[in-house]
Image (cartoon, rainbow, N blue to C red; front, side):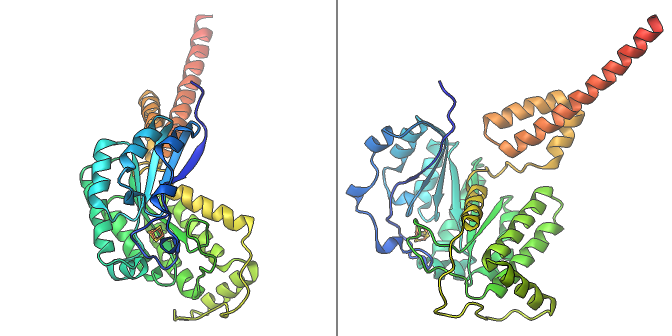
Length: 345
Ligand code: SF4
């Protein structure tokens, strides 16, 4: 069978139980008879990775059938959800233990529920996450889309993620086809950027090189929020003066829409990939490389296992360490043989 290389997204519905302030899909839902069918799925090409998204995918009662059908043609499946339908999600994960689940939580309880427009949304999402962690589901993560309303919850949510031993992925408010909106924007850029800085400081304080890279990524999101060099320079000037955080509007209401550039698209794509592609335990810790260096055979076995389970970051670390370890052993052997040859000769 030819190697599967395609990455695809299957939008199974535009219906949603939530009423998020950054998404209009609930105003324009699909009718069930308009949505993708199992027959359609059978016609899709073979894929290496498939993201199932919506709307809220678990609003469809036949989601297990969709996943079953997609597994015939996709090596890896990750479902993006607001986590509300706990029982359906847990039942699906029991049936498909390898399926990835990414739950978006938009802030602590009050903030999340205000943004989502559904009472109990936070508790339901959190309960789903906690249950999945308790049942040791291998591929689960959560993230938030940062905006004016929830930026102050960034660090508290990051702490919750740490307590649960999970990765915490961030993206910023943006406009997209699946949000069905064109007027999403951050008004108080300074306040949002300052909260990103708090998160960056927390990430840099950690002992994990991976989190240092995440800090760098989040720093990029500040640049994305400001959008151009002039605004970034203005932010730096305000920041250096130590201006306290308060609600301000940098872009006047009624100002023309900012043009969506290729760079914006790349930032969105990076945020989505960060959120979707890596399983929770795929940390890419530097220790995998160190241990593989000193124990290269073990490192090689670990690399093969990580590759099999698509923990690509861990796989790369083990592979690097094992290769370096084998090179060192090769050099030592060569020197030893040369010395032996000289003694014998
Ligand atoms: S952002 Fe997600 S959860 Fe919120 S309304 Fe849109 S599809 Fe539903």
